[in-house]
Length: 241
Image (cartoon, rainbow, N blue to C red; front, top):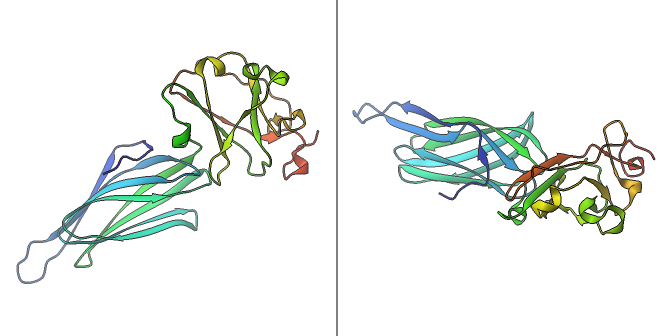
């Protein structure tokens, strides 16, 4: 089974169900699903939930991912045999918590379900993972428009070009790879389109202190959340100048 790119947050859950055989004296059919109880995955790029299923004469398996009353993902696959390694792949763009229901059915129609909690968060996509560098991940407001960049001591502030932050798929997550020594020295901020007219603000539209990541080391992920932008009232936000 291929490895998932996520961090499993809880121990595996094994569920079983027994369906009665007919009057011919056949042994009961047992179905089991081995799955994590909670998973955290990245937004904006393909991710996979992997589970194991076992039973006599497996017929099908399905996944349903919901958020509140909204169904976000559904998928179903045909099975055969008595054991299956199941990989359900999907892409979810919006961060937040989701409910997942996994169902396995055998040839007699008996079924078993397993429920787990899925958290979608801003995480570096594979292109922004390097054992020698720091992965910087920023979650921006959903009204963000323009090119996000990082400015700070590592760019000589106004004297150097901003370090581009790459949008991950259709999510509100942005990534960059940085040298550990660069991000661990001095302060930094985010801005749009290389202008201080669109520098990041706090949720009340006030100025924020320079960000720091002095303890960042190779292979680390530094995650931040951006609340607002200066002059965002011009492109969907709530802050003026």
